[in-house]
Image (cartoon, rainbow, N blue to C red; front, side, top):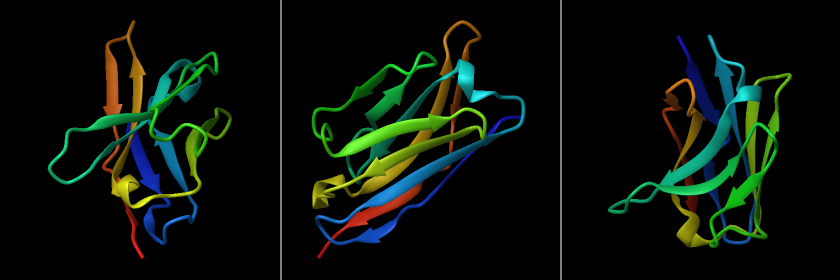
Length: 118
């Protein structure tokens, strides 16, 4: 059984920083997966924030480019999202995802709340 557990969320003032972590356990080695961070704000659809492939190619939503950085530690099976210069519109529940198209795998974490408010 695969588990993705997010941590690092919380409340921060505009302009602040947070680092999210996603620890993977069970029958999964994230090194062969495309890992991603998604977020969902109240009343809105879930959207991609950032994604990193097994080849370390990254993709970012336009709204977070230059502020967020996705990274992965394959040895520890952990995915990270460094979020700087946070804005109120970054407020959402952030979800970790692990996907492998060839194997038909699509795993999600339970989410962690990020609130940016003064």
